[in-house]
Image (cartoon, rainbow, N blue to C red; front, side, top):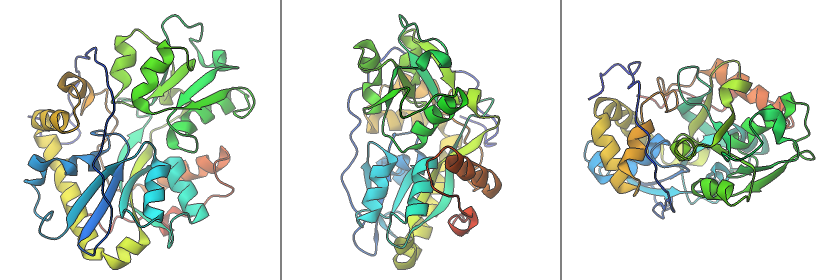
Amino acid sequence: MLPRDRRTFLKSGATATVGLTGLAGCLGGGSGDGTLGFNFTVPVENLGSLLDIPDIQDQLDNIGAEYELDVSQNSSTPDSLNALAAGESDLCLVTTVSYASAVMQEAVPGNITMLATDFWDAHADHYGFTIFSHGDSDITEPADMEGATLGVNALGTGIHSVYQRQLLDLGLDPDEDVEFVEQDFPTFTAGLEDGIFDVAIYPALFAPQARDNGFNEVFSSQDVWDEAYPFAYIVASNTALEEKESAVRSWMEDYVTVVDYMFENRDEVVSLASDHFELPEPLVDSFFLTEADYYRDDIEIDTERLQYAMDEMHDMGFTDDTFDVEEYATNEYLP
């Protein structure tokens, strides 16, 4: 069992050689005043996905009593925002670029509000998004990527921004000097082995595959960011906040309970999540709440660091302007 103090993490975890196939989520929507729809992208590492596990739901006070929950998995955060815009969902996991773009473009009718931080990227003591090439590749450092094909889950995402920051630092034109190939995360290892692309960016859940296959680490987020920054967030449509405020507040109480529970019952959560999402338990155990996982110490929104990240998204060309994050983010829904 992990100590209650969230600042105390497991310091190691053995990686396992495994293969991942499809990671299917449940279909659902956000219809009905007492029903909330939640969308995520990567199971387990997106903490809200844990609320879909029945044995974890049993630990929660509000689900089933104050609201019903429909959970759905998408291949990218823009897809999740599309679900919010269509009224098919109420809350979702988004990242830097998708959040900034959604706010600036008012992609969701009535716009969105950030309610909590899911995890940080580029922390010195934790995992940062890492770009790998095949072990036989000549691409072993960032400058080698000129003219290369880059595997990404979707353009216009926070994942894409990690590439963008490095390319711009190298003086390369992201539109002319490289080619992006969009595929789902579970296909990245096969994509490198089959030569579909030259490098691929791995989230924490999939990084053990790259390490176990002897792939080259080309660069990581820590190489292009001077300091950690909040990367993934829980957001709600403002329509949901207006029409389902009580349910959203109850969901946020349960979300905080899940975060507390996973730190106190780490091994149990690893087992439950592995079974529920049909993931090899050694894989989940190799990263979840270890140094191979993201920095998750505080789910409160740090508006200063968030503002910095949003300003950087503008500087990298993802948005035409920046905005005051305090108008689109609040900690008031955290119990």
